Image (cartoon, rainbow, N blue to C red; front, side):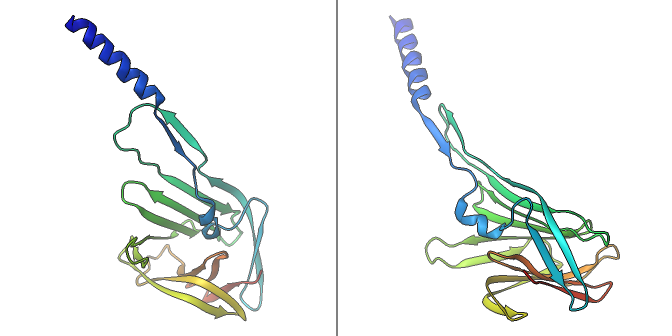
Amino acid sequence: MIMKKIILFITVLVGFNSCLKYEFDGFPDELLCWIPYNIGDSLLYTNDVDTIVFEVQDFFKTGYDSFRGLAMDVEWDYEGYYITNELENGYLISEKYSEDGSSNEDIFSIKLSDNDIFTFSFWEDYYTSENYYSSVSDSINISYVSDTVIGNMNYYEVYKLNKTSMKNSERIKWIIKAKDKGIIQFFDNKTKEEWRLIN
């Protein structure tokens, strides 16, 4: 009799588990404004003398996923990114946006050359709707403005990441990133050139 109850309990438990379905929509569409370019898009920058052109060669965003079964804690991590070609001078642009489901922190990782990577995290206080951000590295200072004008263009939700110290292999001193436009400006400390987005 006890054995029948155990078998019945296991059967009910397995049947219940197979009915539970967990679904994940993937990378949220409302966050695509932070990785705003797709394959084939061109990004033009000027230093007021020359122009350089990047072409987006890779784009990815985490897609829909689901599973059935019993899960005590379901955590979904997502990421999205775009990557351009590398120019003859060594510049490239890679912007990656990801979320760590366990910490609820969103993380930006921005690369402008093989040796220049800027990484910072940000999160929203759900009680106050205040946004917070912090650098992953002690050698980067971050400042935020809700809007600014650069080269007669208005930009909104703008982050400036500035290196407080640089290694010999690094060349990009600071970058400015804006919602819907990505990297809008950066400074090459070796050539002393400031490049500005013009499209």
